[in-house]
Amino acid sequence: MNPRSDHHTRRHGRGAAGLALLAALALACTVAPLLSDGAAPLRADSDPVLTALTDGRGSLSFALLSGLLGAGLGLGWAVLATALGERTERRLMAAAARLAGLPLALLAPLGAGLMGGGLPLLALLVAVSAAPLVAGLAHGELRDLLRREFLIAARAAGLSQGAILRHHLIPNAVRPLLAAGAVALPRALAVESFASLLGLGLPSPVGSWGATIGLAARLGDGLALIPAALLLSLSLWALHAVADEALSLAAEGPHGGAATDARA
Amino acid sequence: MPRTVASRLIDTLPATLLPIAAGTALASALAWATGLDALGAARALLAALGLSFLLIAPALFLGAALGALAGAWAGLAPQTGSGLAGRALIAAGPLLPGFLLAACAALAVRAGAAAAPLAWAALALPAACQAARLARPAMTEALTSDALRMAEGFGLDDRAVLRHHALPAALAPVLGGFANATLAALAGAVALESLLDLPGLGARLIDAARAGSTSGALPALIALGGLTGLLTALGTALGAWLQPLAGSGGRGR
Image (spheres, helix red, strand yellow):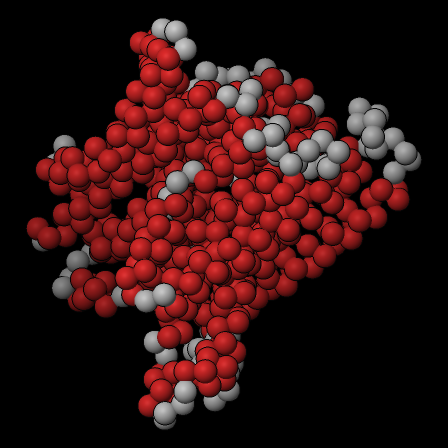
């Protein structure tokens, strides 16, 4: 096996491991309340591992919700920029690049504190903090796709714009755009955990790893901090591994080699 | 300081100092409007900014430099001690967000550990992980590049080829990704200041947000934006200065 294919195999192995780990974490967090002896609401008396697993339901489901929202915003941004002509495209993408260089992670705790919190607002703020990054990646993928030979050949063959869009552009754009959108998930989990750690994230009835870690760090309670920190770390690793693999698969193209037309 | 660094800083610093000045002016104006000491408010904001700078800058620059070297070494000799350290940093990157390390550091400080070294280590580690992740593939690519083979063909010894050709190529992407490392360090610093009740800009921002005070949060947010730009500009200028230093000996040979 040559070093390049070895590297690809390892990366694909990491992606599969990340997916398996995420499935295991989701399952464990779902069944955790069934293992509880009813002490979960009395946090001081409860088992820290079970508490961390129960908190995982809030963190993971919120990350999924706000990550999908952020991915949608970012993808919409990139598609809009590509569709609206060169001048608007330059402006929109320059704005995305500038925003990505700002500490947008601070928006979530700041907005939650100043505007009174609430899940929809927090989800929107977390999504906004992930959107410029997704927009940049998705725009790069779209530009790359639009330069491919098969599109030039389709135009030269006299196909209408609608036919090109339906038969060539959309089928080939789905995978890279989904891969770019996947980057929003770890970002959403990290931003929510950061805001909850500061006490300005998910409201207290909804458990969160960040809130547990923040409270444990303030109280000096290492036993409560370790399980939540470990589960958060593992989830972030798994989400990053899946997103990296998705991006790597998108770069390889539909047939595993250099990107080619799926319908060729 | 070489002229290139000075000119780079002259180009970028005004744009980064402007938000800091605007934040300070806003804090001062808001204090004056509410009948408080305007000069005192401006001084307090600048003092908080100074503390945040002292907390982040050494950790960020040192972490990025050490991470870049470890990552480059992981590309050059993955089985050596430094190479293994580089690989460990690359693997640990996604596991260790800055705010989580800040919480662990805060816990250790509450248990009696020394605050400053732990705080700097917690902020340096994410920067080191990111630098290592960027430097390793760049070093691997540089080692197989035509420029390197040509330098070897001209009879340069391995050490000179490594120092003057491969290393600058490995450091270049670290400079490109320095803004992300700055953002990660900033989030870590905000968490650390808030958890340890340090009087920095991040704690000021979060305290104002908790109190629902827009007039308290806005100047701190604007100044934090300026601090991010300032740290990125300083890091990029410093890296751009180090790169030609590494490459300069090769030109003279």
